[in-house]
Image 1: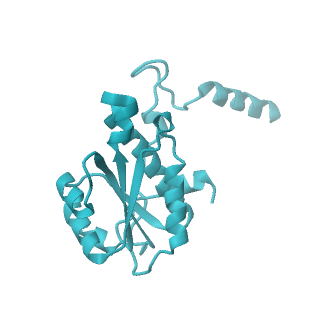
Image 2: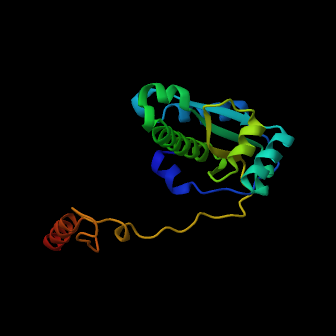
Length: 195
């Protein structure tokens, strides 16, 4: 599956079948997270792989999302703010969150390409996550990813048309029915000539 196919196929899976995920697949997902762009190549992300049922229950409670228990695997994506602050000082937290977001998207797309369902959970009780994962000061939870095999009860959410979101040259600048009307006009002219 190529990247565009993975982007098109990916959706937030919140319902899983009871089937374990092989270590090599989890490793592939983690590797793709490490290959994401990160500020100044500081590589300050850490991951905690969670399979233990009791630990997943704690994570689900911290996220107020009971369905997390169904996923065979949860991955906590963390940033080491101590190492980021050494380089970026007051921008460390913002850059770390951006680094984590890029890594998480890579991980979701890789999971999709491996025929795994996944979901990015970003709202949780920070203190409960910290306690359940026994995090040291300076280690910040950025997100939780669930992984497993989808039970196919869900479907991908519909997206609006691209032209509703794109402006040219400035905020609320000119919009076109087609995003690139010059190209569209050229195609129309070429087609007319061929007729």
